[in-house]
Each structure stands twice: as structure tokens, then as C-alpha cells.
Length: 416
Image 1 (cartoon, rainbow, N blue to C red):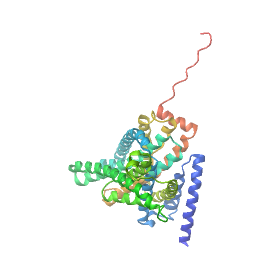
Image 2 (cartoon, rainbow, N blue to C red):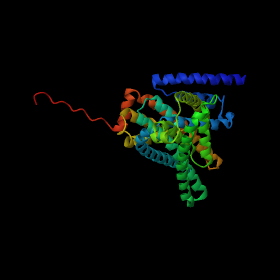
Image 3 (tube, rainbow, N blue to C red):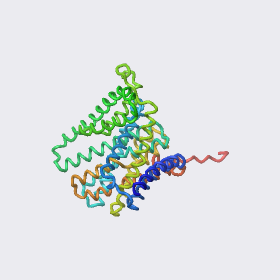
Image 4 (cartoon, helix red, strand yellow):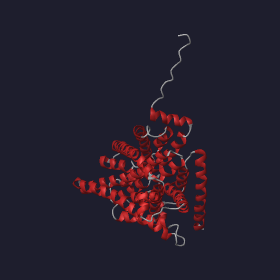
């Protein structure tokens, strides 16, 4: 009976996801919010489900979702668009990441007993935005191409920065600061190695596509290759997420690059394969946000409320970051939407679990804060996106980004 109920629930979630996507186009209330709230209702509220019930499948499913979202988004990034978006990405990523990490670290240090090191470790973990939230939102909001590319790349880089810097802080804490050079080298090699693995993998698969298409039921082979590429990069101590992104960028550009076409028998994905991948990503995204809702913990009210405060501080740091780096390069609506983007996701959740594995003092309290910020970040982003789409909300965000409008001069009376 329980199995039958579970199957009914899975089918119902798929239909609800399509309904929420339609509502998103009509009301601009993001579909991810409803999926997250369903997870909260099934998990911490009613206790019908829990992440523990899924065992090792849950974390693996989250990673699979991230990898496919990054790969699919990389397919649409043309080299011309990548070059155009990169300067804005680097400016926004560095400014926003540093501002958010410092604000959250300082607040945690000042108002909790966690101490300076753990406070700024928490700040670093929560400073990177989540591609699993940003990418679907950016697509549904009909943002400009440049803005969408910048937000997508910023979220991908932010995840990498969070993971690398958090691991570096953990390494420094347990092994001493004498190893800083080795940690910096590991970062460079991990990032650069991931790009090399993704590029070589993309070129290799572009030549193998013709062979795999001859096979029966071969539509899923590209996704399978992405999983192998991600896992291989991680086993080689490179960043698997960046490898998946680079793989997608290469595979999406091989047919537009004359040099590659002249040297190699390469081709990209056809329309049927792209449609299949889009359906797969939609399905995984649906269950990902329900899983995140299941993972929220409401047991420690003190840390839950503090997570809500930190989420508001994230917004306070995000708005000036967009104001100083992005608003002059994209439209007013796009910059307002970019200022709303404060969601956290996979990287933060993984690092929270890693702290517990490494027996960091007060890791359980920090994990509670992280899950609270993940929850409140998605909720706040969803609410702000809806409000900024309204005339009044757009004007308010425009005031924060651009300052008060210039006063309209009063016309002089006639005859003067």
C-alpha cells in the first residue's frame, strides 16, 4: 500500500510541476517555491518523508541534477556570448561573493558563540549562489541573453569558490597555515584541470556521437558520458561541476567553430537529443526542490531564525554588488532581477555534511543555519522576483539600485 501511494505521489508531482510552470508564466511566482513548500510539508511539517529514507540515493540524485543542469546550460553558451559575459561575470562574482561572505561572517561572529574561524567559514559556504535555482529562474523570467549568461556563470563560479575556499579553511585549520601554497596550487590545478577534462571530453564525444546514434535506445548515452566525465574529474581531484560545464560549452560550439570542423569529424547534439535532455532536466529539477524542502530542519528554532536574518543580510550585500558592477551594462529590469538572486543550494548542503564528517566543533548548529538559509534564500528570491515584476516593486528596487529619481523641474509661470 505504501509503495502504491509513493508511485501516485511521484506521478502527481510531475503533473503539479507542469502546473506550477504554467503559473510561473502567468503570475511570475517561481515554480521552485511551490515545489520547495511541498517538500517542507511532506518532511519537517508532517514527517511523512525524510532525506534519510532515501539513503545514499538522495545525495547522488542532487549531484546528478546539478551536473545535468550545468551541462544543458553550457550547450546554449556560444563562444561569442561567453566572451561578452565573462567580464561582467568576474566583476559581479568577486564583488558579490566577498561582500556576502564578509557580511555573514561578521554577523555570525558578532551574534553567535561560534567564534571568528567558524563564522567566516559559514560566510564562505553561503556566499555562492546555486545554479540549480538560478538557471531555471533566469530562463523563465525572459531576461536578456547577456544577463542570463552572467547570472548562470556567476552561480557556477560561486559554487566552485565556496567549495574551494571552504576546503582551504578546513585544511588550514587542521593542518596549519604552512600549507597555504599547496592549497592554492590545488585550487589552480583543480579548476584548470576540470576545464581541460571538459574540453577534451567534449571533443571526444562530438566525434563519437555518430557512432552512438546507430545504437538502439541511445538517447541517454550523452547524459551517461557526462556522469562519467564528472566522476572522473572528481577522482582526479578536479572540479567535476566545471568539467560538466566546459563539456557542454564545447559540445554546443563544435558545429560553429570552423577550425574544429576542418580538423575533426565533430558534430553537436541534434534537436531531438536537446529536447530529451530538457525533459530530463525538468523532471530532475522537480524532485530536487522537493528533496531540498525535505532536508530543512525546524528542530532548533534559534538557528532557524538566525538563518532567516542571514538571508536578509545576503540581500543587503547583493543589492550594492549589482549596483556597482552590473546595472550600467544591462537593462533596468534585468539588473533588478539580478539583485533578487540570493538562493543557495547543493554546494552549501554538501559542505554542511562535510563539516560533520570532519568533526568540526558546533558543526550541527552550522548545518542547521545552512539549511535554514537554503530554505529562506529560495523563498526570498521567489517572493522578490514576483514583487519586482509588479510596477511598485520594480520602482522600489530601481530606487535601491539607481538612487532616487531626479526631481522634475517645476515649469515657470507664463510671462516671466
